[in-house]
Image 1 (cartoon, rainbow, N blue to C red):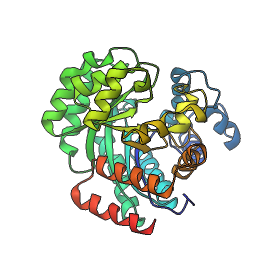
Image 2 (cartoon, rainbow, N blue to C red):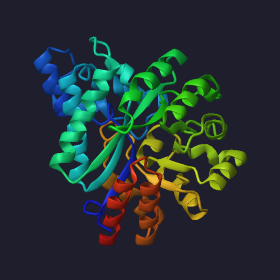
Image 3 (cartoon, helix red, strand yellow):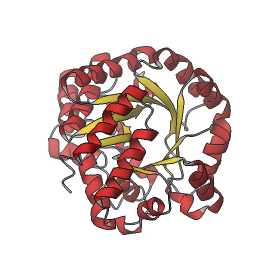
Image 4 (cartoon, helix red, strand yellow):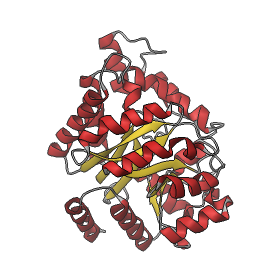
Length: 333
């Protein structure tokens, strides 16, 4: 299968992990922002996490440079547009992009201005390319509960206008869900859909709590349900969808190598999986690359791919009209 030309859906992609290196250099030169280097290849070395990265925390260090250039409305709009352009060029038909608004307030932007800017970039890309999208607002687990409430409250006005869901991300500790029960409950009350990063760093029980305590409909990664029978059973029974990111999972050491990844076992056992990039720049990947990895390592058939594509459509937080539109691309497979 030629995944470059096949239609694709992506549900787990971080904006700040997917900034073009040349864009970082261009903005930094224009705004006199200090970088380790202004050479594209050297900046890529700073941005891209190696496959032998030691942990999730080491992987997350790669995000400091992109955030230096994501502190103005103009830059946020540009970076959002370029991400959707890049995805459209490899035939991604629908994409949900997540980002943490509070990381972009260093130069005085309000949360509302930040959200509006990335939506404007997405809308311009939608007009120019054959792609649709939405944004997911991420709350940082390393920040306070009050900060999560702030994101939920200030993002509320954008629900149905480019924002569809809430997320918890960043470094993962055991039992983190208990801290955020109230803000996520408020988000659900307001109409946000819920996807939670969990089970990425060896703690399958976090997935169980994300579903039971936070009402997670989807789980970012979820790899370690393989080691938690209760979480595995719940995910399977409730048909909670896993947003799997193969390359990222090797980099963060959720698995040691691609051949050890449980995505194929999950899929064949009836757990709903989707394929995603996580971070196009930090993981030096594309949706086509991720699909190729799964296809090559686990002999994914055309029927398998169709099922995973449909999992992605049904699990997306898109409106029904968009879902019907992106379902039709399956005819071409």
